[in-house]
Length: 262
View 1 (cartoon, rainbow, N blue to C red):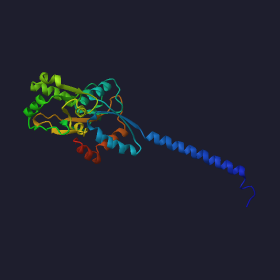
View 2 (view 1 turned 90 degrees about the vertical axis):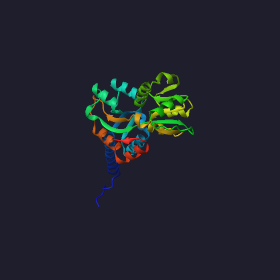
View 3 (view 1 turned 30 degrees about the vertical axis):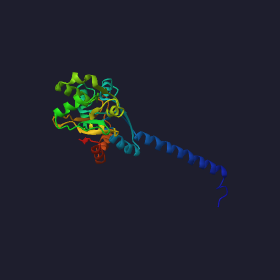
View 4 (view 1 turned 180 degrees about the horizontal axis):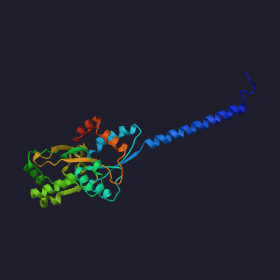
């Protein structure tokens, strides 16, 4: 064995070199991981919030990043018009079409997600009315002490429906418009007797009873869809995220929440 082969200075120099290259390699790996974990900024309606959040939770476990801002549709539309829409929006199909016509959303990016009819909720244990047709609904609305609906697509439809029924003025004083939360919360708090909103949003408040959907002759189905701002490119990450949300696992949960996958 040659003398000096285990020279302490050489050993320390060797260890420092290995340590330096190890740190450099780790830094490169971390930078690479961060680059791949592109954050997707989403603005969405609350109609499908519960099943969506379950899917996102699983998606993020794989290292992806999703930040979702929940807003009423009217507020999302305002933001999109002001060029403040993030990377992806999920709102009703008609609003998306209107924003595409204004040049605010990319027409090639539109993908249908789910659809939902309007449901009715009442206080826990309250009598559940029989609702077979339009006349049954009219009787319920006139008989209830108070009612509420949202500022979203379902609310806009109901306002028009009550006008066509000729009862809009008659019920105006006992009608409450809810924004930014499930309408069922107003029933839960005792503020109103009857709530109208998309079925999954009624179901999202378990402290109240779900009466059922609007009668078939006056039901209104809202389809929600994905779209991206026209000022941005639809990235591979966004395509993959949409594909994941529409995967078989997501479909099962959507149906369990009263939604119909598209």
